[in-house]
Image 1 (cartoon, rainbow, N blue to C red):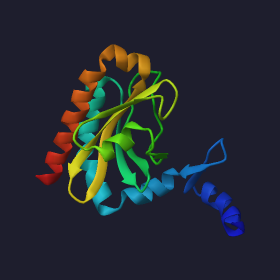
Image 2 (cartoon, rainbow, N blue to C red):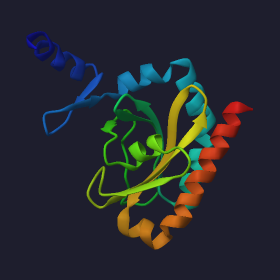
Image 3 (cartoon, one colour):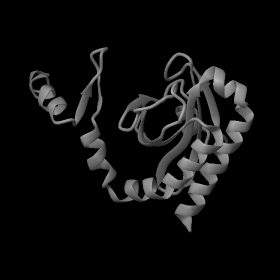
Length: 173
């Protein structure tokens, strides 16, 4: 414990970790940058990017590419909404799976899942696992709850599911 306490400031200083206001730590951008160079993660990000842009454009909300990491998920790519009020800056962030749309999507990979206020109050997430062998990935959107409800949650779910299938097909092809 003492050794970890001594090295934490250096990890934050080098941007390998980011100190959160609640005393916890999340992955820093430098670590995400290094991790993104891991072969399959890099291929996944490249293959998914155009689809994330398309999903963002279709829903007008922030589109995310997410990987499973034990009992957490890590955001590895994000295409932000053009709205001033948007969910952003999550690349490299680890979130617990319990009670989230991402956790539900990894538990039931057949369809998309919706969770309101699970990640942040006033935010709704819609996530669908990507059916690729040997890799646990998902795609989704995050949005202010009132705006995605106005857009239509079933409509947004269909779009997330379609993009999930397109990414899987591209990775297989």
